[in-house]
Length: 353
Image (tube, rainbow, N blue to C red):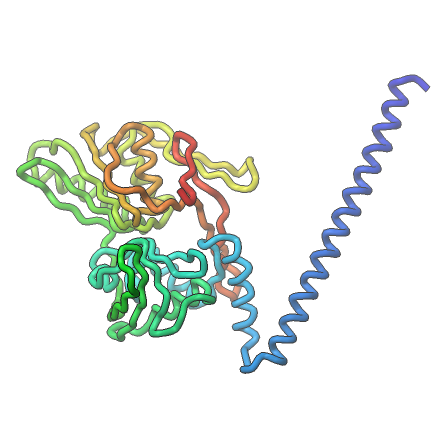
């Protein structure tokens, strides 16, 4: 038998052995999965039977799903039908509640940002505040969705939040009145004496990009001559829709990458690039951020900074560099799961930074 044939025989044996080994590994993994699912079933039955109070199957399953997803990161979770509908309304810029964007941090509810002109903003809630109790009930042990559900309620009703703030030694009890939250995504002012256009972006909802376009147009119209520059205020903007962050960045860039998203599979990497056309016509831009600027706000700030299109001023931003995908589950709400991280044009991820 010549060397070529011998090599072919050995290769065939190796490949066959590898396939058998892979099949055995896959079989073992399946067995482990089935054993773990059996464990879940056993615990489920024990809780149904022996817990001190009767609990519905729906609550147990939804809590288990929430626990599984929220253990991955603070931004993943399960949305039941009601929560899913609320989320869909919120992205359109109108919803009920306190006007506060929150996340989980070490078991506590942490304030990302209050939204302008909402009960939370008017009551003095600040980015970085920790909510420890809601109407006297501790939030430790609740999922993020459960805590948010407790803060929701009929407009006009009061709610007491117990707050811990780094700069204040004792806990703060703050009473707020729930309201229908109507978010105006963009507002603007004209600094006539300085010929500067001020654009405040509150959130990145479906109407944000068109509202920014309108603001620039109105500023130019009011000043008559061209303004000498723009201030884009992203302070306390908790983020929103990725496509709106890309579109707003594109308004002020002529070319180049705006942001890239990278997921578990390298082939799923996506890059978003600017198209020609700068509605500010090259005029200087200052972007204001603070510790309440998160997610989509950080995409815009990062893109304009990396392309040297704007100067960034203020405080360090929140540090949310992940992308969540909403996956509807037929007849059972949806799951919100982190599917990618985003990177600025200089390939920097600000996740938790």
